[in-house]
Image 1 (tube, rainbow, N blue to C red):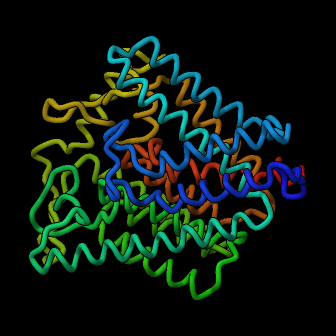
Image 2 (image 1 turned 90 degrees about the vertical axis):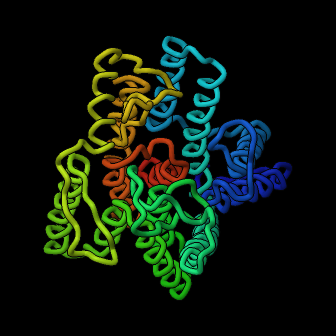
Length: 400
């Protein structure tokens, strides 16, 4: 729905309910394990239930108003992505109960992007979204800081993750706040930093600065590769001259090389003694083992992959994700699904509004770098970011 369209009087209450539910789902995004949500799937959370209610309200609003979003290429790409996931499920899945749950999750992610792209252009919606993301991010950062303080006070909590990356260490604590993993917290910080800096969010200066500072603290406490991606996103937002843009491009290449090196060789690092850092080439890293074994899985079934709810890689004999987003999509859902996802991202870039809101694209750029180190296609905030980019596209502007 465009910013100038009017909603009939009868479903306006339904629209307010829809917006409240949607904002509630956004507020719950960084709270995976708290409050506990023991149903459906091991990684399900309350935001899923609230968003499901929002989706029902959105469909009800559209049916009542007889007004659906005009079909755009991005909508076709989202539909094809779900279609290829369904084909992968039908042709490869042996455990249908588990596969169906994963397939439902893929549908939820695409609906999250679709509904975000429909709601964000409405008058006053993006500023409220920005405030919700800012407030929940401040609470998330406070939880991360509290976890670290409690750790050094001798109290173990779920606010901290493993003391290492995929291979645990005992040298340092890594914040994860309400997430299941520190890496996921770092990824969310990239998304939140982009949203609060978005022009249309119109946040008060003090709130934006406080949120950005809190996000920096939170992402640094993760001791993850996501720090590089968060820094890249911040650099993209600051690149307002030709020289800075060139510098950011060089920095992006440098970050990609660092992530590639860390994926091939093990780095032993203790923050309390930086000089002790060293590379260990005697054993393959978990990510390298996962990537090479995922490539073999892809070669075995390039069209439909190993199935939606599978782990295409292996590490120490245990099923493992690829920890490289393009490869994980291809190895689980097939090459057609990967091409569809890539075309979706390409279309968003080609149809972006001019002048471009670099805050939105800084988030997508940071998440793209993060995608080299983990499987971001399953992260809810990534699809919210995709929806925001679609809402800021030339197609959306032409409707106004």
